[in-house]
Image (cartoon, rainbow, N blue to C red; front, top):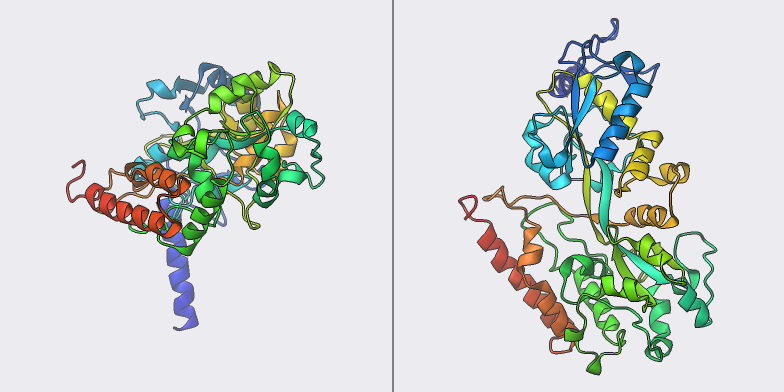
Length: 442
């Protein structure tokens, strides 16, 4: 193609891209906010605010909402009083700025504004690959999910070193599953629950399925869940190795004994390892016991990270807002270090931030920081829809296939690794065909 034609096409693409995001850039004239343009001031590193701005933002709690309003009034005193809030639970989605789950933001995909790329800075956009694939639509702010918990005091009592020389959040003597497996005799000599795995609940168990490098819907296609691959075979091999240790002193190590015990293990302080959700008041439980706990990412296996599932919440902007530039500015300051500090100080939510932000935030307790670090290695729940039933997320297959029934059969050695994988693959095929119906909702 002629070079001049290539340049012309490039200019046309850039122009259409600018229009699609409701932004117009003038090389010779300043951008003027008129209710349709988003104007970023590169010299001041902020967005211009429309005259007579009046923004309504969704927030998860009153305490956080009040902090947001006060922060805006402090940051932009010339626009004091122009931001108000409603609780997300009372939202009508006529508000200017949404604080909602990633899944719901996906459903609103065509109703939210394409965001300016300057909002990508210092945010883990890679955790939202589907919704932000073509355009920036959603700014992830918080995450919830499971992390690995170690009873440091009990490891000390067992004579194991508890240093973390490489400062990766994991105790060096047990920061790989190979090291943990090698201590089989020590674990089986203990009276405590060494590791109260739940073999009846798929969400918390997901991290173990990732041990071989598997992650569900890695190709971002609803017809390719990925259970057929060699990486999933290796994950099942890992689970088979897990089953060779009696982690809870169950008779015959039967899988049926491995029920949900995570909450009770924290209450009773009778574990060496366990899992905990970010909502499970880990710090409060820790303070009630004389032992010290550490929250971290999961130990690695064969040099690979295990990836627990996380659910995200964050900001999007109503495409019909009269104040798109001011809405951008509100999100910009709320995702700043001070803005993220508001979440830490005025909510129970766990911010989703990068390494730079982690070190600048102040925490009421160490476990919040540990959850934040562990979520950097987590896998976001995919939001891919079925082709013929777009109101149904493909990830629902994960819950429909009775996955843990197959895993328990593998644990009890009534199915081999190959048989377990074949059973899961067939269940995925059957359930996907059932869920991906021609008529939405059938």
